[in-house]
Amino acid sequence: MNQRANLASRPLPWLIQGGMGIAISHWPLARAVSMAGQLGVVSGTAIDAVFARRLQDRGVDVELRAVLDQFPAQTVVREVLAKYASAKRAATSPYRSVPMLTHRHVQSSQDLLVLASFVEVALAKRGHDGLVGINLLTKVQLPTVPTLYGAMLAGVDYVLMGAGIPAAIPGILDRLAGGEVVASSLEMSGTATGDEVPTLRFDPAHFDGPHNVQRPNFLAIVSSHVLANALLRRSSGVVDGFVVESPVAGGHNAPPRGSLVLDQDGGPLYGPRDQVDFEVMRACGVPFWLAGGITTPLDVRDALKVGATGVQVGTLFAYCHESGMEPTLRAQVVTEVLSHRVHVRTSVRASSTGYPFKVAEVEGTLSDPDVYEQRQRRCDLGYLREAYAKSDGSVGYRCPSEPVDVFVAKGGVQEDSIERTCLCNALMATAGLGQIRRRGIDEPPIVTSGDSLNDIAPLLIGRDEYAASDVIAYLHTGLASHDESAQHSQDAPERH
Image (tube, rainbow, N blue to C red; front, side, top):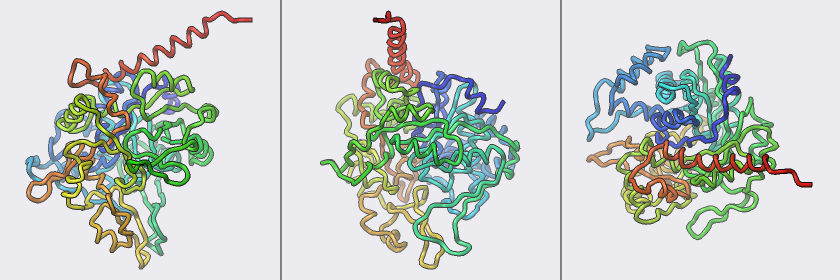
């Protein structure tokens, strides 16, 4: 029995833990949620850099060794450990960097991605038989296929992808499951010429895995019923369901449909065209979960009332003690929530992707203009870079958050660089994996949360921290009240 058939025989989770990156939704959080009977999700964003930096900080413990021993290509394991785990990094020393990805085939880069993704999922699945998913951003193209394959080697149950239109992903999953070579085109600005036309190629055979691996279910993260319908018609394979995300969700948001109009805080205004038609969603014939602003039992009950299978929850999990957020920073946010409301704004400038991005105003982070101005601009992780055609037809890479003169020299428009934040470096710092710069200066973090960040307060009554299991128990009362209401409706006598 293949995995798709096996999953079809299991009850669908009523709760999906959000795939928050970089490394906020790390394997301990996903495992805790999965062991509680729901869908735990690891973030696959920048997983190669995350794994390499963890190795430099922590080395290889017994649990990690057990997982590494399960990886089919042990030569890859030895080479990665020799490079990143041969000596423990001093706390004041910079991390050894992972080379930035390009469309040019570099086997060692693919090796690290596959192994890192395998490890993250395998650790999340270790010791139980619950469901585990992986979340990726469609916008981040270069690492996608190797990351998916590593997760599949570890038996990942679900793949979730948004931040773009992931129409090609179902077919890629099908080909990876069959052990086929995957060749995909890199989206870019302009047109490359001749041999420089960028094609991303990945061959599963290099990793000595089984010829056929289990194909996970695919959930597309969408912001509208229009996109959901389009994906069902145009995707390269089966879309098994949707996460319908509202604009109050944390991280990247879909831009409003139509002309961009800003509110008094500089955030985008959403209108009637952005409202989801749940009758259309129900007619799609596949399960869907609601996401964004799901912070109370009433939110769960309301989601079920409109026909959703359940909910996806990020913010409440981001501040539980199993979260991957750096503990001191997490405690700071909790303290600020309890002492005063933390403001969350939607920035249309922060992310180099061009998508709106949620930024929580937390002292000492990049939300502070002084901290932002003091940081030296640099782009040395490069996950959000844009591929573009140079004047000679070759392929280059640029990012609006890199040094302005460098960006402009590559053909970028100077105005596009204003107020941009290097999310790659900042989010690594948020997870406690920030780079150490010259003179011992740490990369500053950035905190992204949904608009309802302050709704974590009820979980903190009588305590200064809470667990993932507390989140599930709290929200479960909404599921119970819905079931009770539905039962009463069935038991009510028929009136004539």
